[in-house]
Each structure stands twice: as C-alpha cells, then as structure tokens.
Amino acid sequence: MLEFFRRQPACLIGIEAYASAHYWARELVKLGHDVRLMQPSYVKGYGKRDETDKADAEAI
Image (cartoon, rainbow, N blue to C red; front, side, top):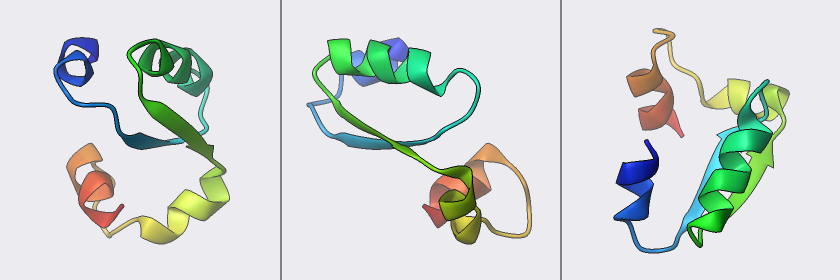
C-alpha cells in the first residue's frame, strides 16, 4: 500500500478510525499526504450492501 501512495501526488486521504489507523496515518503523512481520520459512525453512512473494501471505496 505504501508503494502505491508513494507514487501518488500529495492528496487528502480519509481513513476510518480503526485500530491501526493512526499508524497508517503517520506513514502517509511522512509521504506528504494530508490524512484525516473519520469517526466510524460517520463512515457507516457511506457503506453499501456488500461489506467489501471495494464497495466501501466506491461509496466514499
């Protein structure tokens, strides 16, 4: 994942605040990205029927 973001221009990244979110946020900030952690209750509204990463990414 870090290799993917290393190749991307700096951008805003939203992450659901889960167990390892702070770790990933720090790593992405080191690469120059602006990272915002979102409360899980706010992210739930973006969800679709299927609980897959692909469906979640499309919804967000």
